[in-house]
Length: 145
Image (cartoon, rainbow, N blue to C red; front, side):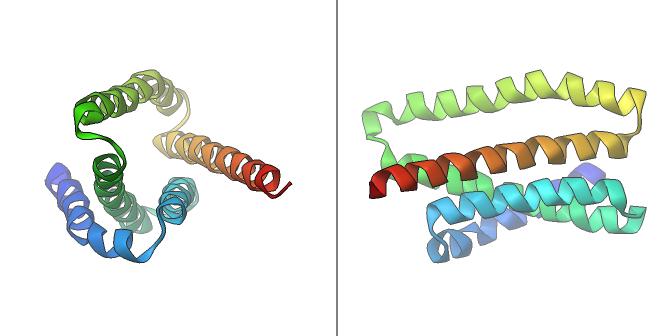
């Protein structure tokens, strides 16, 4: 039942993704989704169980929007003869990150608590967000010189 609920919210995010993708610029949407996910994971550590359900729903919804956003971006910006390779590399990268981080997060959940593992995931995503913001700032600053 839990898997169905998460998949339902992921699917709902996928269905409504076009509205977000068409109204928000690509870079801003990507940053917004990353920030929402990281703050939601961090908030899971500090909240009660009832609010955790809402936060997991938000994460699932954002994941659905992200998947459509990434697929649309690949289809728009990649020539057709390279598209399969790009999609394959994107999928491989996602699964490689999962293969690296899942055991580490599971280890943290075993040693501490599952909520500590969510905190760790949120901090990792927040570090990616801050890193991207710094690179974006440096890039914009060097383009204006």
